[in-house]
Amino acid sequence: MARLKAFQGVVQQNADIADSVVVYIEEAHPSDGWMSTDAPYQIPKHRCLEDRLKAAQLMHLEVPGCPVVVDSMENPSNAAYGAYFDRLYILQEGKIVYQGGRGPEGYRITELRDWLDQYRETLKKPTNLVINV
Image (tube, rainbow, N blue to C red):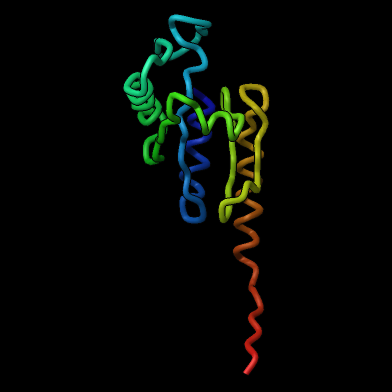
């Protein structure tokens, strides 16, 4: 849960320059499977989309103000982005400009924060516009 708090902080600090969304995929530690002893919630393996939607509501409570969307039961988002367990991405104009490592070991909220800080600095630089008449 500490990672979610850190993520929420980055979301709030950068709301003026970035839209954020959480994509909830399949449960990493289902209570009826490979369960983690420190899991804050007991969530069984999703058997249908309704199960996943219900579990995603808990995620929404952890990251208020950030939209939470749900991957379908076929897991196309998970497959496309290699998101299992956690993964951070930044997309600009439909292209991936930052891809974090796979969580939990590769989940580096500091890298995300650093990227956004650098991006914020580029927004401060004046741009020259040439108009031919």
